[in-house]
Image 1 (cartoon, rainbow, N blue to C red):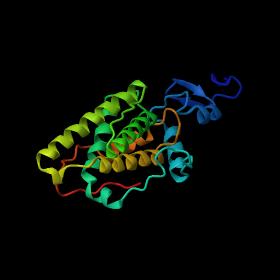
Image 2 (tube, rainbow, N blue to C red):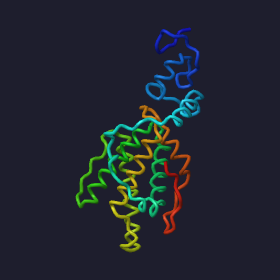
Image 3 (cartoon, helix red, strand yellow):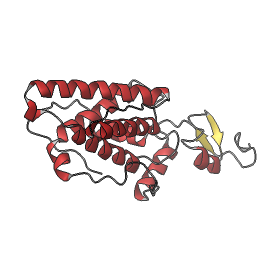
Image 4 (tube, rainbow, N blue to C red):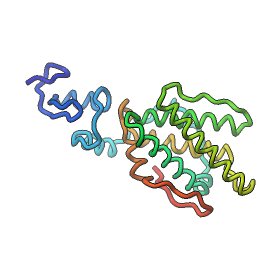
Length: 212
């Protein structure tokens, strides 16, 4: 039987997403592109293992790559970083259609917003696509609440906009390194769910997080 995608090669691999057999070449080319692969597909898992051993190159013109993140910000605000990561994972758990590109678009847009806020300006440009836009709004609300709570404890405890910007840049870079760049990839999402299964408590003493 010929592959139903290319209609040329022999169909030998069972594709759980399509519930039929396809050829190995189309499996490799269309995986996480036109085929929305389930996370437990054996061919997908094998491909992800290979990709983790051979990281992709991030284009030089990728936004926010020229920012230098102070190490002390990451060390001091690890709890907030974990809380942000958990919030993203929680949002995606309720949105089955969400993919890595949605997460990255929301984080990048929010980082750009906080970059302008840290310079004293107020300029927002949320993503136009529905899912990234919803995640952007969700994270904005979350951060506003956190800042409000911290401000009530005293000025010295408040998170600065520039610090939140650096944390968002770090999360964005983590996502770039964890995803494989395919349109329907959920690698970064799965990483967040695995590393941040519970909501962290924002305390004075910070916990450790996984640095990519």
